[in-house]
Length: 54
Length: 254
Image (tube, rainbow over all chains, first blue to last red; front, side):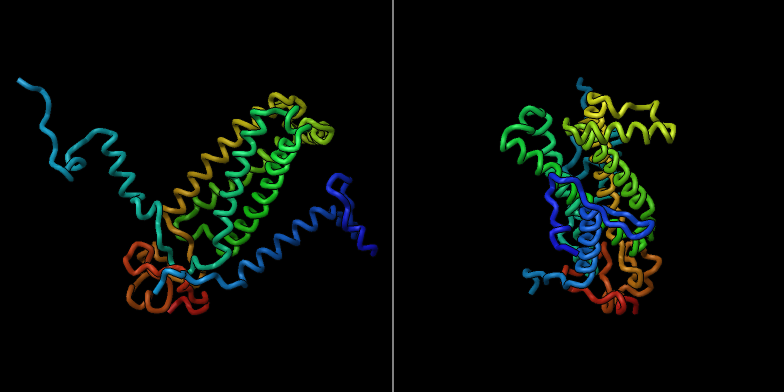
């Protein structure tokens, strides 16, 4: 796939990906993947320790 | 002869007063004392990034409110033409995107924690209603952009809403009506429900991991000493753990 396919400008109409019955715009797919990644990182990454705690 | 009552002793003001203000204050303080409303310590399990997304949602909401106020005051002639207007318009738009990203991750986190446990059903349901009201607010926002996009969306939406039989109650092609909904009514609904949601979170405490003992549910705590040794500290006790003391949920139940 041409990598520029995913790099549409925000002022251009969204590109769509089609897999059979599933059709999704590239911006929506990016946002969903971003949310899943953030969710995974929020579970896995350690939380900073409290600096004030002796 | 004087008809005035003697002043109550210091610290005894609330004891005998039956005025509704006094009763309301006592009920409020009993239900939500200041240290519970604005806590500086949290149970150990809160030391996880997944608990951050609720407050991130609120932060994004505040940016939306401020930028939206500026847009509403200055009007479309400003935010479509000037550099600062376009920037403010973009700030409003992108903070909405972040608002929904944060809220959806908050929703996923709470769903997988079964966050309605421990008499937190109302907390869950106010979150659901806030989510639905936010969708309505965002939708009406797309309708009041005053550009070709908003015309297109409103005419598509008109057909969709008419098709499901609710088009008679409001007119999505009426800019004034949609502006009223977007800038006044729906943000008020989202704001009030969010405050209610927050007060419920503070009243009932943050939901513990599924394997942990709920510090707000005393019926689950048979031996407080054992619980604090191995898992989360009771939310109401002086033994409350400081953030950073988290233990894995798998070790939580003694």
